[in-house]
Length: 209
Image (cartoon, rainbow, N blue to C red; front, top):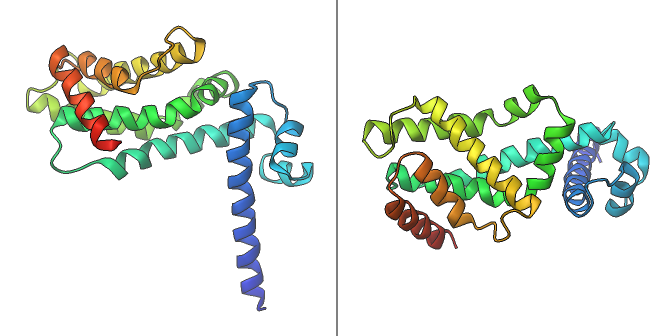
């Protein structure tokens, strides 16, 4: 085997190990937010040196999980979007994509908020926030969304509502943690009448199922 092939194989194995560690860490930390690096290494079936080679500390591991969650939100949205969507349909699709990932990662997002700096979380969520602002601005131009706030500011409000609802589900204050209800709430917050918001959220959720 050529040296280049050996390097490529080693790189692929390292990437595979990293992804497996992240997947296992997500499960372990969701089950036990106090799980240690040793707990994660045992669950992933790797030695401590391998784990620490990818993630030198627990904070770095949590940062990696938060980054992955942010990437998956964006990817989930792009997989489902269609040019035929109206602005409120696109916003519902976006919120459902966030919820799909956020529901799985809500404990990890909470961990990241406690372990990372506020600036770190703010930066990780920037692509999500910018996409929301883009959708809101488009809807404001067409009169679908309220224009009492500029789109970037409204995107912060919708983001805060989404994170708040995820935290409510995490804390047991909202037992159902229903994605359609979350999407409906975000549409209403953006200025869509309640009846239409619920109908749009239900239709988009059914199409995604």
